[in-house]
Length: 168
Image 1 (cartoon, one colour):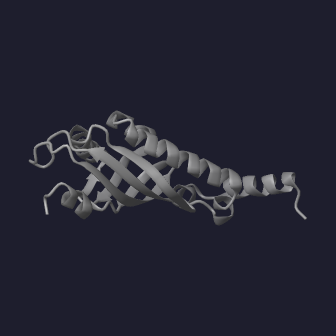
Image 2 (cartoon, one colour):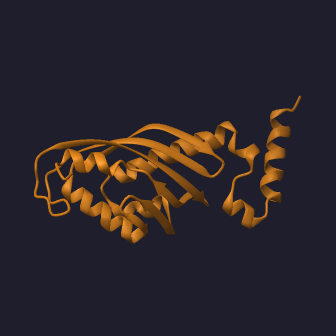
Image 3 (spheres, helix red, strand yellow):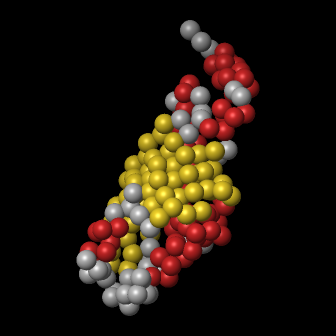
């Protein structure tokens, strides 16, 4: 039976022996299943959503690497491009709020299923404000590097958003 000290030493040696390139790309499987790691990832997910809910895109650096790439229904974009898109969304839906439905963790991958709500009170893709409250769902697969999101694959249901606004 391994003691807590033995387990801690084993984990420390695995971290120390991991090559820098490997540590940057992936988290060793034994670490990704530990309770402290999973707690950290869940806390990171909460902070990540809180940054989006703040509507302050200058805070993206808290949760994304400087070279982060986001692949979403509107195209693939760097952090600055994503900030521009989100600023437009925040102008169109000033009460836009995201809520986590569930989180899945696999090594350095953080999957977040979320819902969102917002009221269309500003111009959106040429559509003047309608006052319609929209609801939608999405899923993100986030790849983390050095404790921040380096790449995101976002599967927001844009079809439902456009349908609710009468654009389809």
